[in-house]
Image (cartoon, rainbow, N blue to C red):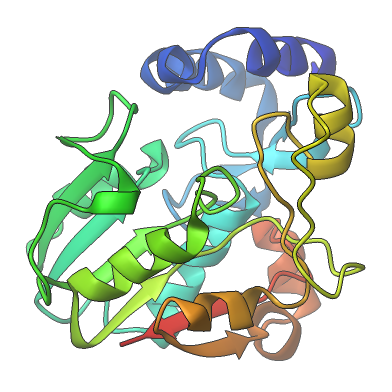
Length: 256
């Protein structure tokens, strides 16, 4: 199963996967019936989640067959339910590079004025370049932009644009892959071979790998950043296992 998923992720363009991947995953769900793990995004239960990753060392127990949530999405859902006003307040929301698992659910929430945007995703309603967000200052209460900053040319500009379009008092979740062995963000444009880029930056289309300084990088965009060790400090081991969460991921809660 891991090899099949790896090949699919490597060789089928992402826009096509975003359109049809959920049908394939749901077809596989019959083989994972059980009650050992639970997805807090869609509330489905399985004996385990599907593996996920671009190579044969892909992560076990990662992808929800029902809604396609990954570990980071399940963490985001739990965090927002327990620590934010996302499900209770009337909010205008900008979701950049929207994830399939969230779109329909957020669109159906009556308290949200929800806008999706991306430069290429067929799932997004607004086509935009994050370096030049086509909305006025102080437009949104909330912004989501997860696993994007490792792809963009100028991530400080992109962060600044998200800060600009947030209202004073607004907040954002802007997560990115990190390697905690690096004190500062690792970039090397001289590495051009795709295999070498994957080795150094996790994927060949990543331009950088953020280190322990990621919170300080977000602050350069204008945000007040709280590094919340929600998983490590507030969840039980049983919850981390039940929801299959990234056990050491820090949530970067960004406020304007």
